[in-house]
Image 1 (cartoon, rainbow, N blue to C red):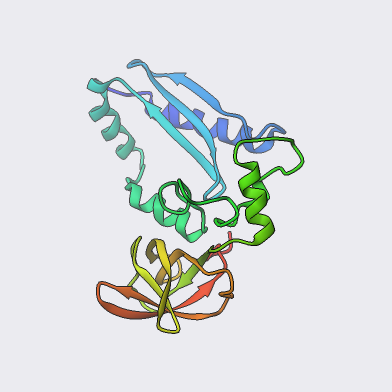
Image 2 (cartoon, helix red, strand yellow):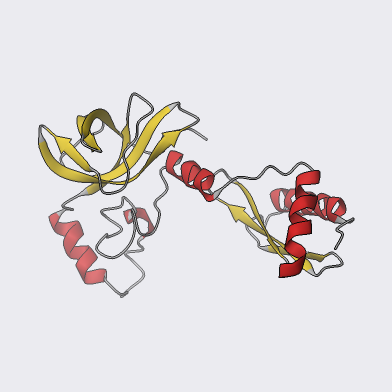
Length: 215
């Protein structure tokens, strides 16, 4: 199945994105229906690099040829690991790592998203109690000097003790060294020197305030 109009479709997508950038309602979700094989482009605002996410929905039998057509027009493939690196460089939390059961918005540094004046909501009393007494842990960033980086679950040592745990870690292509997110006690401050156990070897790290890069 051929996709002769794919270049035209991508040109239309670019025009849609330009329209979203210049319009007052730039956060709208636009859908572009086109193509002889009934494929669809969905365009969403994408916060990680302040760009747009384009999803393509296509019939199963047409997917291989669409993939080849996208390569022909210069689209460069990138795996989900690349997206995870981008979100980690920005310090954005991921559900199951920095967000999820047992992790409150205050611990994750997201107290600003809680509307305390909107009335009753699920979990309000627990959050108010935690805000009153103070959090027992707080999400911080870690910068490592070399290319090695910790993975989720690796312990973080402060003065020889294990008070914290890494939630996400990766090598930052932008910075050229390892970075991570993790929970630490609330009295740990930015710039504190810590150690991370990476597969039995101790690596030094510095507590940092995300984001790791300025975009």
